[in-house]
Image (tube, rainbow, N blue to C red):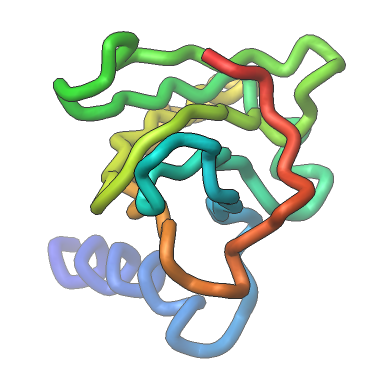
Length: 132
């Protein structure tokens, strides 16, 4: 019985290795924020995924490090934020702890995300975010 349980747990982690797509993931965009510091950025983090996965999400809790005034941000999809977007400003290496709560009673999932503020493919000069 223990071997079957271990094999089942291993199979849960293998689909990504086999090239099968996951139902969703986090991504970010940024743009330079107009200050006298060139490394200061306005940025947003959001969910990308298949529509069924996104519809199954009840809320996302983002937890930022202690340098941010508002460290815990809860985003609920009430129709005007379908990708659970969270906006902020900052510089340097930014890591976010994420908790996803689901509508269908599934157990919450947890992950961390590194906000990429340097890659050219993440830069969006037309980025629009509500200022915090």
